Length: 419
Ligand code: EPU
Image (cartoon, rainbow, N blue to C red; front, side, top):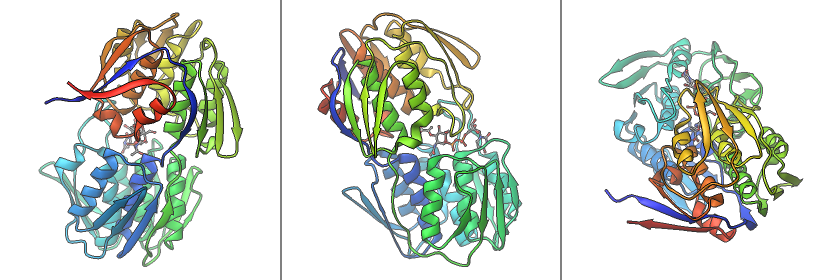
């Protein structure tokens, strides 16, 4: 199979203005939330991404009708006739599991293919299942599928050992239609969880505490149609700041929510990047050479694991040694071997990478392994001397809308091609 690739000639300073798209990881649970109601749901500021199309296919497979025009999606859930998320879709996108909670809550049953391992770790969904079970769902595994059934879910207290993002979203959605009150303890506090809660509240749900570690949901009998505009993508925002920084560029970022990336901004400033906030805009100026900076990934409001690879790319040319520790996923260093192909000096021991900054990266052919890893390779290639070819960019298309067009508009020398 011929895959699409990027050809990047590095060394151009990024200059100009870039507009951030809607957040993939906020849009996906919002689309799944349409299952909780019967009728028309309207979402705007939706990014044009492969994962969004996969979620549309999943909803259509359940019997929903959806239309995607501009940045708006309408989803008609009037006549759902199936309650299954098939293997073919789940294996291309783990976030498919987000239909589980809404299906059980609304229709009393769901059959969802159990997601396998993935390039960044084993990523079990035991906490999603434990939560639904505590709410009274009967769950069994059948031919690789999770089958969940419940007459009506019951409110209860659920404690997560780990603050899981999609687990919190699944249980929060399920709890909106349960009988009684559900309390989620050690809930994920990510902005995407808050965005979902705000949209559910507009549908008539009774939710308190989203954005804090205890979320309380009082179940209601029914919800009305969803009308919501998705928050800007904080990871895309932080990725563009990092791309600007590595090229010693000077850019303006529009349509961002700066508070959502506080931890990343602090670390980038420590590395010498100048960042000024003006409402929903950010003015960014990269340093001549970044300073070494240590980073440890943490659940929100800590430094996001989804920015670890990109930040590491920046540290490869820092004026000293940085230590980067990954605490969320056990195998999220797949980009290290590829960054070494640019000449980066990185050693790994367990969950810690030690990055010894060098003066200059050199262009090379490299291969993307997952979404954020591929963003880190693009960032490295933008700074590398000479030409780089990045293969398997379908990974990047899952999560960055028109990345090469946005970078080109900022003056990068980047082309998409098929060989
Ligand atoms: N975990 C469990 N059991 C569970 C659920 C999670 O042990 O039942 C563990 C995971 O293995 C991991 C940790 O808990 O070690 C946190 O995982 P989490 O469940 O929070 O991750 P997720 O919900 O599957 C979302 C994002 C990811 C992002 C993580 C962490 C979506 C659709 N995906 O995944 O985004 O990395 O949170 O912030 O929201 C990406 O966009 O590239 C991406 C991978």
